[in-house]
Image (tube, rainbow, N blue to C red; front, side):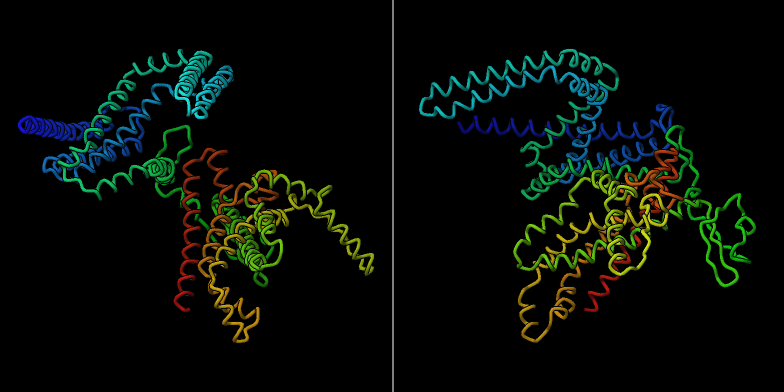
Length: 560
């Protein structure tokens, strides 16, 4: 028995050595293939590939080749680092193969076709549900094993029948044949082969004997399992956020228009955005064309100083108007969203009856759909039948009747007057954001120790003193978070403007904002390169404002 056990152990060890050697060879082969793929765009094998795509492909495959070779050397030395690198590369290769398989196999198109035919197979789902209920009924006959078994078997066959009926009802056979036919193409074969090879390599490296041979510890396995669970979200972030972010940075240096091959133009987009000039005016009413080069600059605004003044010209007038409107919007919307929220939070933090109900009421606007809210406010702002103007008229009539003041009804055109259009949007934003900020302040107030207020009361402090000396300092972290997030949200305002205003730019461009101008440049005028530059300029502005707030918060904390 001992001899047989030793032989089996020796056989298992030799098999494990063979697996490790095969995995090491695969790592070397993958490095060579990756190097070939990295050189392919530059030796004419991929003539239709774009420059940025070729650079991205070469960088990714080049780094993969380097790390794969390092992993092969570590595996040969029986180091765990090689196992970790190999698992990462094979996992990413497996994911890429699955995506290619879905794409070139026509699975996405098949899902669309399934959606169109889903109604025909819907009755079959009822059979599936009935089979499940029959099988579940067996739980009530646990005392009779035969009855329970029979019901479970009947339920299983009913569900199989329902699945078969659904399969034929939605014409899934033709879809499967189409997918298999598509996989016969070169890219389909490559995706299937990649799926098999990367899958086997991943399985071979994940095996317990391989892990033990490569000195894997419990901490290593815990780390790998943690990264494995994080990988779907992490890959989604890299593919759908970080990747497009870097791509937009590249496009900001090109003249991309979504139709032609982008051409590198360097800093021309950024130069056009920030190209401004300031010229003196002889008189306040002097024409801009007399002092500005109107072939390059448009007048953005002027500053009157005594008998003269200054005129501000820019190559891209709309950007500076959008920046001004965005900053004005943030300047008013942020305080109107934060200060009332702080007051409301202190009121709702009291122990008066019904406070829980009012907390929910104030939070409702924050979870309501922006489209619905904007449409409701559009009706409220109506100059003829809107309730806002109606109540203003009633108030003025009451005032005039009471005091004989003779005040004229202004009949405000909220969304069609350039003087009030931006104000209308500010009111909506403040009303909608205030409830969410109130909840955040309430969370901060709950964490303030009650002993501080008790001690202050014993020292004779009044309500204002306690609010100013205890509540505000203790709410400093919450206030910083609320102000920062509200500012960022205000700088990115788009939905309310786009839905409420018609056109979205408002009368005389009074409501055009940076995000709205970005949208118009990229998706209406098809200037993706210029829109990308606008996006990065907006990022710099938001980052700068956030950094200033952070520095102020840090200084106040150090001072305290």
